[in-house]
Image 1: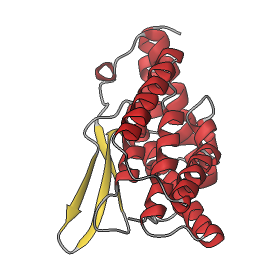
Image 2: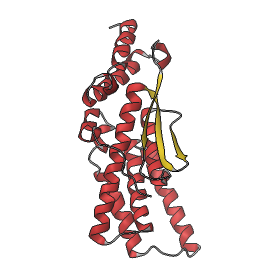
Image 3: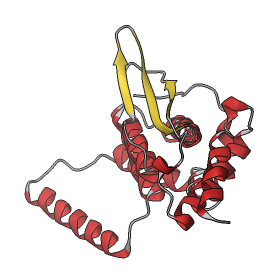
Image 4: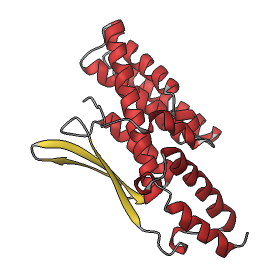
Amino acid sequence: MNRERAIKLLEMLRRRTEARGATPAEAAQAVELAERLMKRYGIEVRDVESESKATSSMEMQTKVCPWWARLIIFGIERRFKLKDTAYRRRTGRNAVVSFVGAEHIASVAAWLFRAIVNDIVTRAEKQARRVGVRGSSLIKFRTSASLELLDRLNPRTEQQRIAAAELAEEQRESQCSRKVKPLSPEELLAIVGGAEAGRDVSIAANAVGGDRTALLSHARLGRIRSGT
């Protein structure tokens, strides 16, 4: 296949979105193949003539986009190389999250975000019932899960891991020297439980690797169920 034929194939793949009749599986596979073609033939987005930006938006169930959800947005942005992603408040209405990019990529990014948020919220609710985590500790659970997923969405190099470990140790020592109030047992449970949940979210490991069709298990979820 030459570069010209590859560009034509990319154009065809771009049209294979759920909105145009493709199933979530076809759209996810299209993203995977498109990325491989662009890398192999050195094709830039601008080389695909009819490539245009599309917005995939969804309404959250809260007035604001919580910090832990913003971490997931950031991770997905980096994973799919998206720009202009926005989360905005609306007077008297719930917040909206919008992913902007090539149509099929924006759609898959939105499916992934919806699935992860739904999974984290569900796990947080189960944790709350099981061990009595509530209030600010519940927020710590969600944030801890999001931080774990952020690392899974964009795996760090060995050097970055070492640097992060050193920074964490410096921060720990600094907190000890400043006599920061220690975490309560409930807060510790929430942080540890959140990290475990982040490692166990069913779609994360496969969806960001070579098999994007793993998105299917969550692609048909309804509106986002989010906590504050």
